[in-house]
Picture 1 (cartoon, protein in one colour):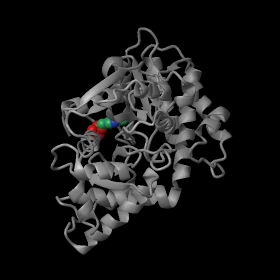
Picture 2: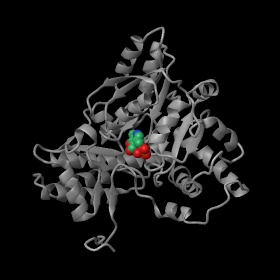
Picture 3: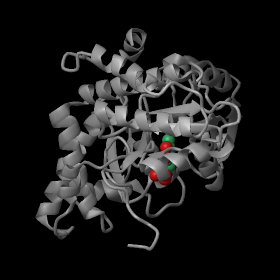
Length: 415
Ligand code: PLP
């Protein structure tokens, strides 16, 4: 042990909006001997992952592609397979990650129109529609980039409505959606919402360590990749799809992570069930939102109907530096909270409520946040946030909660 550094007794609280807590079961599934990635056991493993992953994305027609990479690598894969350098892309800047997605596209040589929005706003379908209506007939946009759940602001955008807006214009642009902090936590319906490419990472709703990037590609995207795209090698999904058909990869895959992924999919799809997973995230989020209101603080998300079910970004009162509160929470309580990113650094504190999490863990987190805020000079009543969350949790009939895609708005009104 390093001198002067002593781990705090008890379990550390990792309540950043990803990486999330990895359940013991998943850790145990990965804690095993590495197997031959060209042998029959491995082929069986790969084949067992793809159908439930399609289920998680909500697709029957789409193909799922796994890469040993992070969300940033998945951004790159989502672009280079379907877009040729110089093609035009429509992007919106409504948070740190939507800005970085647009920057990734620029770095790869695409011609990106990046529309600035307020950080805290959702991406309005009307904005997408207006931009597409005004598009150039000679050189139209080849893709629209959307971040489903902006992890820096805690705002969810309505992907189904954005697809409807694109269809109203009759525009041919591909719809490319980042689901890094929404997949397997918030309803997502790849086929029903007409998404062309979706991307995610392993370290959030899928409850795994960071290290796997996942793409779902629909028929239009697959067709574009066959004849076009950018020069690419590692991220080229064509050889991966070819080899995956037999259960293999054209490179050495992250073998043990894939065992963890199988366990995570068993937990999410077979045991808890995706509807129950979504309902749990909604329930826990409603508790956190109630706590923020009880503290008299503001949620960075401007529209209560668009608040994220996987994280809450809380605006600090005047004179309070969120970095100081976060440092204090870590040092005093071994509680890790999300910092304000980019231009909202120091102004926002983010509570992650995504992944393997239950009511009691949320209550403990809220208790820690309350104490850290008070000790850093915020005036609030200790226990008020915890009590407000408890009120939310006892209201719910956990087992009977039926939560289907599209019911979120209705549930939001009752919470
Ligand atoms: N997109 C979103 C919405 C994210 O939240 C993140 C990371 O948190 C990324 C992309 C980038 O992913 P990574 O950090 O795994 O490269």
